[in-house]
Image (cartoon, rainbow, N blue to C red; front, side, top):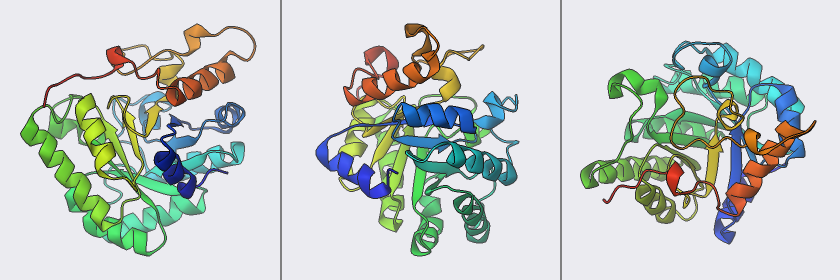
Length: 269
């Protein structure tokens, strides 16, 4: 089973790592056979599994249920789980949520925010809970942003995001996830923290890992398709097409053919 130490070593070696969202045991097993490095049990399940128009209705109980199912299906990948909307508004709630998903099988918890989470990160880390902080476009704050928009598009905005990253890393964050930021900013942040793996989604090819929502990369998205998505399923055929699509994604991340320029946001900062 891949560990946090392995991911840190991958970064030191310059070896990229793959990450997909997953919510059930069957998909988890296919990802195991494809040797996907990292799985995120994402609160994106609110949209792709439950049919909501955002991640906000997802509960902690939902996350625990799906984490346990995924862990039973996959004994290879490093497994992290989202804490859902308003489940970490204070340290006590975050500790309770982290306990629940870690006991269900997660190896790390992920939540969205910035410097304001530093105290929570510190307490969780001190209590043996590795933390990934999600920055940039944070879907739980979609109503604050006024929609799903690229973040960090000016130098001042980029510097503010870097300051948030620095604050949570100083507090003990073991991983960062950057969503919908210019490729240049993804590269800057990944280089700034040599001990902290950085996963990107729409953050350029220079982050240490790449994540996609599994339904997106299989072409099971029937509305707007984000710029950073590539349909790996349509490149496959045959009885093992889903597993082959997972493997194709894994290989494309490792050889850095994904994301290509057309999947990134090119902004001069």
